[in-house]
Image 1 (cartoon, rainbow, N blue to C red):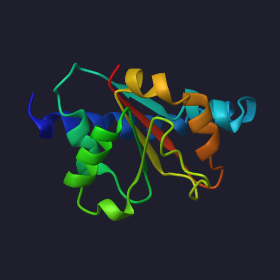
Image 2 (cartoon, rainbow, N blue to C red):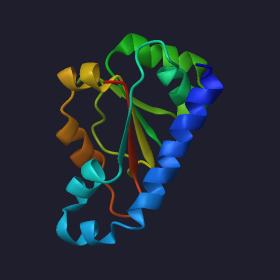
Image 3 (cartoon, rainbow, N blue to C red):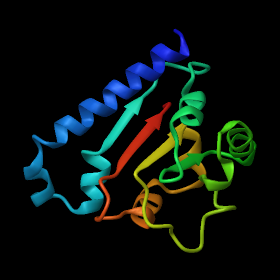
Length: 143
């Protein structure tokens, strides 16, 4: 599959997720903000390794987003390939978890969640970066 096709599919899934939220307004009333983020605002995509997941993040992430990766090598690789690395919020393991959260994130990209959440607790990240002021989305790319 070409990278452009993969990117189009993920973009469409994100669009569908945003559209779906319009029809799940009742969920905001019964779920905590953290539960809503994790259960309604999360998109999972996995079609196997070497399919363009990290490249998708490199192409799509902005300074308003958070990138979560499993290790420093992946963080360095993303910083080397992203357009404005100085503005990117990238965390990995517990080694560089920020002391103070930035003002939430618009999208949290998680590259290979299975590996990321061996070192970083998913619940802790979501709770730490939760913002009720911003419409947030979590994109899990990988298993």
